[in-house]
Length: 290
Length: 166
Ligand SMILES: Cc1cc2nc3c(=O)[nH]c(=O)nc-3n(C[C@H](O)[C@H](O)[C@H](O)COP(=O)(O)OP(=O)(O)OC[C@H]3O[C@@H](n4cnc5c(N)ncnc54)[C@H](O)[C@@H]3O)c2cc1C
Ligand code: FES
Ligand code: FES
Image 1: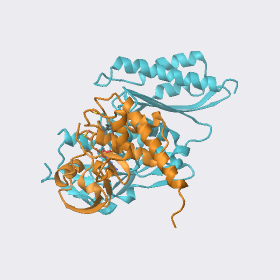
Image 2 (image 1 turned 60 degrees about the horizontal axis):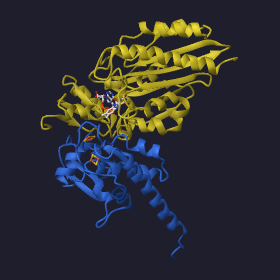
Image 3 (image 1 turned 45 degrees about the vertical axis):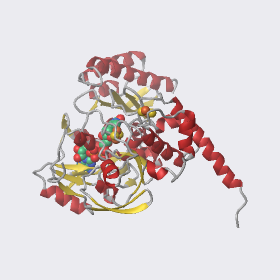
Image 4 (image 1 turned 30 degrees about the horizontal axis):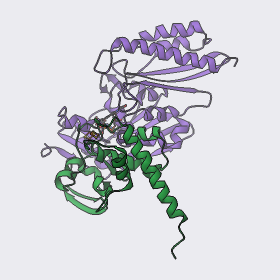
């Protein structure tokens, strides 16, 4: 199976980018932790012509804490997202999402860059990147360019990543103390289950008013989405039962779920509304009298 | 491609196709057939081995990715004669029936106990959540690992309290 595959395990980033440039017509499969690609190869869903194994590249395995944002290398694994205190303190939603992924074996290999590039609407860290307004730094032999995470996907399993580019850095603005994070994932069971619905949100409440709210949704549309209409409805309003009720209805126009092997569109619609209402009710309770 | 790595403590040089799966390399090149293949898709954990001390599915790893790494399989966790306390606990507590999942379970349990020798039942269930067993119903596996942890703790405290052998 492997004889004609053009294979490269680069010694450094420059070599990796050169390989991508040389093989840009072949659709090179960049291999990171392999937790998406290897099942696909083993079950013969894909048979790559060119493979670039980046797992050993130190340059892609970094973590830097800046004043306002965290910069992560694409090879950051789910286990590292769960365990590194710098991530837990500044972007706690990333830790929560990583905790809900797969099982230990998957957490030890599955990476942030792989989750993003795989472009599944059910990728669990994606709603988190959406609400944090993350920025992706893409790199090719010609140089770097920054793309807003919320503009990265162009359709189901489609992104603006070019064949000679790789995801080089993920810049995530950190959470401020007054922002309240929320994460909820529904799968068939706790481990090893791909999301049927996932919600990440951050909210800011002052004097009973929702100053700001951002809601990211997974597995309920062809790509990960921000619930823009719901956010606009909620922002600047008093958090009362009428508003919570209304938000639960409006969020239906932010999503377009489908029936698939994991769930039905109907279940996903009902659940999205229920989770949102639950989150807003909890938020209201926590801020009574504030 | 030449791969330099350590397998079960022995420095090893392999000359294999870089895309060869670790599980095939172990079973076919190294004749280490304790590691089992269940699904080949990362779901069942039967193929679990340790790389640099972390539990991973060897069906999802390729040869080039073990360059410079330490790989440990169930054979590496088994003494030349007899069994480890962890293995004995599985036998005593009925943590196995057909045995297909057992090598993966033991390796996953080892990865847990190496980090946390006082796990509670929930921590054990989390650590083996990626290992499927069609026979036992899991309760006995959890009991086996709980007992092994206790045994290993008591051995450690024996070592701790023993007079220094100067
Ligand atoms: C049993 C099992 C359970 C799982 N459970 C979950 C779950 O609960 N939630 C979830 O979100 N996912 C889950 N997954 C999917 C998978 O683990 C994640 O999507 C993971 O983040 C993929 O990362 P990886 O490094 O293994 O990707 P790989 O398989 O190495 O690559 C995935 C894709 O990303 C591309 N890629 C990788 N790195 C880069 C880069 N730096 N630049 C450009 N392209 C790149 C590859 O070319 C490929 O297209 C599961 C998978 C399995 C097998
Ligand atoms: S055979 Fe590797 S996880 Fe099932
Ligand atoms: S003992 Fe048979 S699968 Fe676990």
